[in-house]
Length: 84
Image 1 (spheres, rainbow, N blue to C red):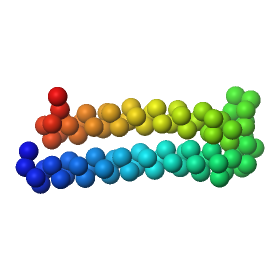
Image 2 (cartoon, rainbow, N blue to C red):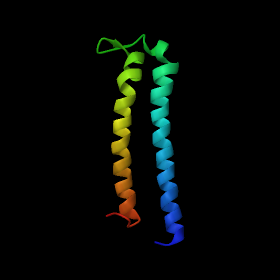
Image 3 (cartoon, rainbow, N blue to C red):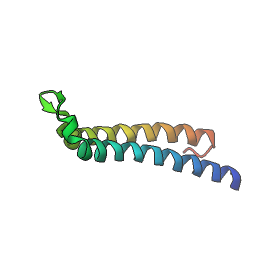
């Protein structure tokens, strides 16, 4: 692969990681800590939503983001012919 394509591949990879990590930071920090009091007014399965985001929601979101990243990278690898 030439340098231009390698740079484009890496740029797309970094942009996807930035988006996914931003989503995770928002869910875990903003929803789990900063907005916890407001979210606690809503109940999910009998528990306050702010508590749910702090204890379980961010973990679930992180696992989903791992799968999203794997799917995205599989497509990107095939597009740039760097898959195994």
